[in-house]
Image 1 (tube, rainbow, N blue to C red):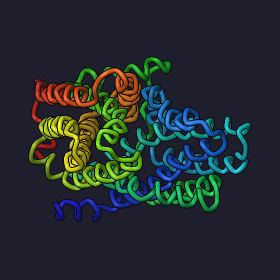
Image 2 (tube, rainbow, N blue to C red):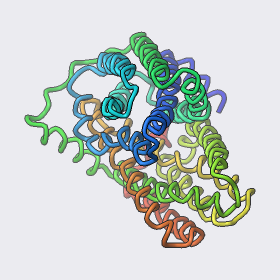
Image 3 (cartoon, rainbow, N blue to C red):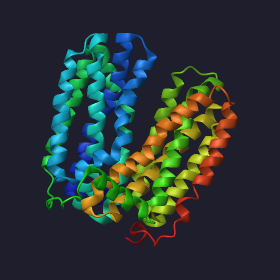
Length: 400
């Protein structure tokens, strides 16, 4: 594992990408938490504070449309421009100082989320061209590690900065990280051909990406399994406070569980490359889903040891199918389509998480949490077989 990490970090483009992920991820994680606190302080409303997360995630629902933008131009200039544009947009939040100006905060968060969809699509496409194909699994694992690592430290930094100086200073911090990330992307050495002429009409461009994703036996089962896994993970997320109540702990205990879960995700990210080469994408995804299934069933046991072990196992298992699916998309998709296909896969895998959260919020008051957790474990165990049913040729990951 250490050798493969060293190979990735010695690759100039991969190293610059990961540095950009760390820098911008720190600012984004800090802003994500601070925006909710900001709204809560100005309005006293939990519902409006929760809308901040919705505003950030809502653009995912139109990911296939936004992803077409990443295929209409060269990806490196698009990444640089997107980062600089978001940085400038965040400065508008210096005018948010009353409930009447909150519309601007929500508008910025909505554009922020849409820019994130375009950014992720363009980044995935450019990574496939700029990073050695044999390192894609390692890169995606380390990218997951960087993201999760920032989620462990950045929210605390954001909350502290907000408490000391207010939300505008957190926005400024986030803007600075986007400028720094743009500078790192500008240092990339990659030759990009001009985009191929797209089909006439937005609908045709979107449909071309969807057809590729759905028509590939190597991709469809992984994306379907990823979407189902995130659906059940969303239901589980809605139960977390009920689980903590069952332990007799205060709501603050949720923070400890998320830290432990993040540590599990960091571990999987570090090991993802070697495991992908050993198992291949489908078996790696299936193993992770099965581990998540066992973890959710264990969460039904009302003890601190079970809760902490479950959190670590969820963190370790949940990212597997996501890493496997996005690595497969990068390997199996022509560069001209990669922005659209990545964004479509992103929508199909992450939109169900929001649905799961809503379903779980409705079920938690109607069904015993322990019963729900066991049922979730069984549903995920069935999902674990989906990637293995693919009648596809062996993945290139297992052959590399």
